[in-house]
Image (cartoon, rainbow, N blue to C red; front, side, top):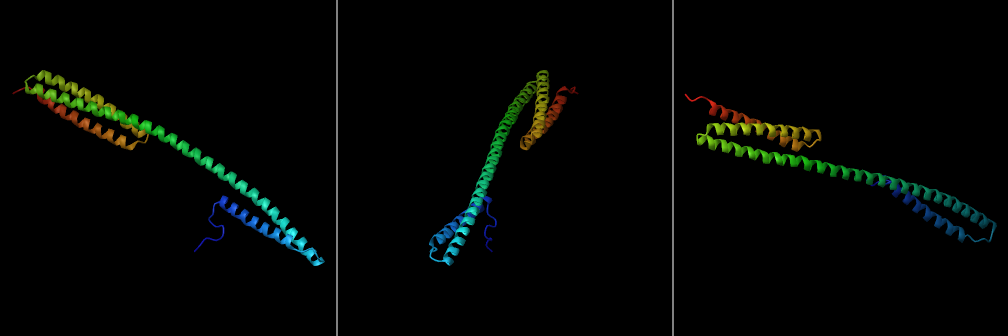
Length: 199
């Protein structure tokens, strides 16, 4: 079913439509008033009534003009409020994007540091193969200390990301932290194997 006249229309559209209709009515009444011949008492009465109807319509037109102006002002104010809200959202997006970039930079650096640990472990294995047990143990201890440091940084990053509501960075940082904890445990077992007295 179609909408009733004026139903569901914006106030500005409705006010403009009402004014347009009343202006058309005013033109019609004014034309009728001009056409009544002034040649008899009856026509004098008809002309007077037509003039009164035209005057009444003119008053309604003036009222509708004021209503349209008010609707325009309300629409302008609403548009301004919406524009300000969009601007505020844009500024929020900019700030959040900058924050995300900083968090991602920290995460990328953690990845670089984690690769450094792999190199230390590889060096420890090489020394163990060469029977440089003391050197291997020292390198493993260095790797464990580095893991502890990076684990702390990953925990801090996850906490910061959670505090700012950046859930994906929080999840990735926590996953890295768990991997580092697992790697530290494996290094502990390797360290025990190197320091265990030979039978």
